[in-house]
Each structure stands twice: as structure tokens, then as C-alpha cells.
Image (cartoon, rainbow, N blue to C red; front, side, top):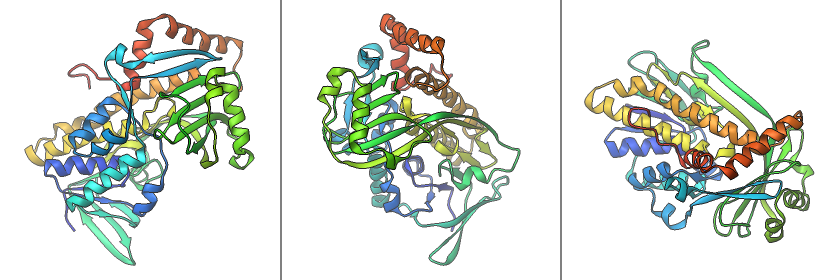
Length: 394
């Protein structure tokens, strides 16, 4: 088989890139080792920046998002019960949209299927070859048969544990990582959210987040130590702990029910550099991971493939390599900006087992500064809703 771009991974990064290239008239094949049902079964957060929403609309996959998603003009921070609302719309004239990553993936899948563009699910033993030359190849097995795709470029959109980054030669990649000494215990429940907007809470007992997937489905989190096991947390124990970390008014409003999903997610910051290796490009979780505190993971992936899609369109159409040559540096600028913001949000809102009184006072001073300064709130709103650089600084 011959195509212009082989996309490894059918998550939101790979499918968004496929849609961008399809609309630009660039031929692409998506290769995914899991089944379509498995991909859709992965439960992920979904807070979309304004720029991500705008791109999905331009790609013709925003109709259901606009109908079923929930636009939020702000979010609330709580520090030991004291509450502060960050009004995104008033501060930076932008908003975010809560729409599950699973739903974004479903919309992209359906659009790709309707267009007839090829996606290979259930591809085993995927391997990348010769991407340091002019004729890269992707091989895989499916239904007992071996297959080869010859292409001009390979886009690695297959996540942190995928084959794309693992295929980079030893020594060619620099890795920057911070692993946090805690995780998020999350519960999904079919009950209306406790509030219309997200609530991020700092408490001496640990961080808590009140989020939602829809107007009738809520997602709640509490910070736990990495030694904790899901089996040790009954629903009652979880909700009791969540209430302790919320302000009394919010705790009183909380509606509980049987959890339909419960899991512990570790937190880490991770960046790989560079992001281009000949004709192989890394995107999304294959390139970087952020703590979920700033709601950035999905948005970073969409940003990456928007930059890569434009660069590949330029190269395939105008035969200019300027865009692909600048890809790594351009994406890494956004990556480190976003890593900094996610690290800062994590540092502000979580408790650390080794923190002293000085550290906690600094956290309190950060919160007090947000309360007192419009400029500080504006900076948070700008980063949370999606930083838009000045021309030439993207």
C-alpha cells in the first residue's frame, strides 16, 4: 500500500490529524493496534480550550459538541474552604467547553468512516522503518497476514507507551521528567454535577476536583498517595473524603450514587526533545505528558497536530519544507509554556508529604495573590483557556 502520511494511533491526536489532512487533500492512513471499541472505551477528561473548539468546528466535527457540550465562562478555586471564581470571559473574553475526549474521538471516527478514509484497527506488531531516509515504511500484521505501507512521512500519535517514540534511535532523544508522589482517585457517577463549573479545591487533607462529563454525569477526584489501591476505597469512603475537602456549602449540595468507574491515575510531567527525526514526527502523549490539573493533555495534542497538519500540507502541496523544519521548535515552545502552567497549578493545589510550614505559606500567598490581583487572575485565565501568542511567537 502507498500513502503520503502514515498516522500511528487512532486516538484524538491521530484522528484529528487525519481529518486535517483529508480536508487538505493529503492522503493518509491511520494504523491503530487496538479495536475501535477499545479506543472508544477509554474514559478520559474533556475540557477543550477555545482554540481546540474552533478547530473542531472548522474540521466539520463540532455539531454534536456544540449541541451536547457545556460552555464554561469560568472555574472556581477553593483554598481551605475560601472560594474564588476565575471569570474567564470577563478577564480574557474566552471560555472552555466541557465535552468528553471519548465523544471527540467518536465524532472524528464517524466523520472518517463516512468519508471512506482508511483506518486499520487491530494492527499487531506495528514497526516503523527507514524514517531517516526518503522512503519510510510501516509494517504490521492483521488477521495473520503481514502488511506494509510505503509513505512520505510518519506521524507518531500513539501515546506514551506507543511504538513511535520507542523507535527513535538510542541517544537521539532527550527526556525531561518529573513524577509526582501522589495520584488522583477518580469516580464517575450518573448524578448531576455539584456545580455548573469546575471546582478545584486545596485542603490540608489533599486536593479535590469536582468536574463533569455532562449535565447528568459527574466526575470527582481526590488526591491519594501512590501506595493506595482502588479496592480500599468504597463509594462511601470516597464521598466522605471528598466532602471533607470541599467548602461546607458545596459539600452539602453533593449528590452521590453508585460509581460506574473508579480508578487511580498517577501524575507526571514529561517532555521529549526533539520531536522530529527525519520523516518521523512525535505528537501528543508520545511527545509530552502533563499533570491533569490544568486540563491540558488533549489540548496540547490538538495543538501539535494542527501545527503538523499545516506543515505537511505545505510540504506535500507547495513542496516547501519550512513548516516541517520548524515543527519541533514551534511545538516545544507551546509544550514548555503548558508544562509550566500545569506544574504551577499542581504545586498550588496539592499537598506534599514532605512540605514544611514555609511551603504551605507560599501556597497560601499564591492564592491570596490571585484573590487580590486582577492581573494574576487574568494570567491564570489566559493559560487555562489557551494561550494565544503574538504573531511570530507561536
